[in-house]
Length: 234
Image 1: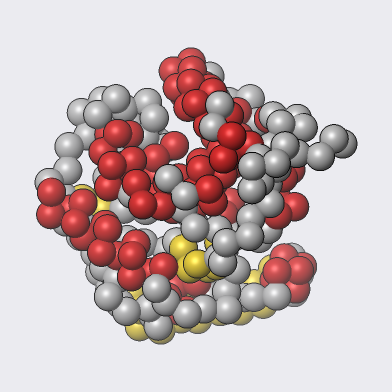
Image 2: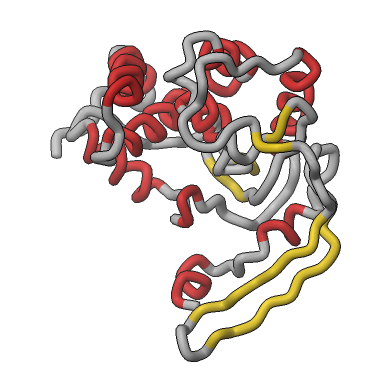
């Protein structure tokens, strides 16, 4: 209840997503919710269309992920369609409302004083938790929520979550280049990398590949500086 009040929106992402069009997502039918006063929480159950396709992968990705061209075409069509919708919802990646404070907190923890997180571009609707467990294959479906976020958040999430698979990350980047090569897209990639580097569980190949990706991003002055100006001293 406290989180619902703080975020100003109820946990009805699947129901709200029923208004989205031209997106490969399960149909929403109905929901039941109830307030557990003893624990101060709201429980909710949603009935949606049965999807028999399985997530592309849960947990660590294998090195042999292979998806047909039709799958990538469906991904692009759905992500482009989501970005073209209208919504008053705000994205909540990892259940936190995304805003400049959140972005600065994560980025500054990983790269203290190095990045100006100013975003002047208009935000767009996004899935906001786009990873391989929320995408099915080989039949394409996109699962879960949506809300307003900086452009490129979805592409960045998927790209960063693919860094440990040599052939997969470049394919994600190529397919979503239009988002990832904007300044907000680059900043979202840095934000997603920072969240990984800020977690102690990120070790081995994951940390190595994420660090390599951040080194390239930090070398790009269009990411580090806003409008070509160096960040103000703190």
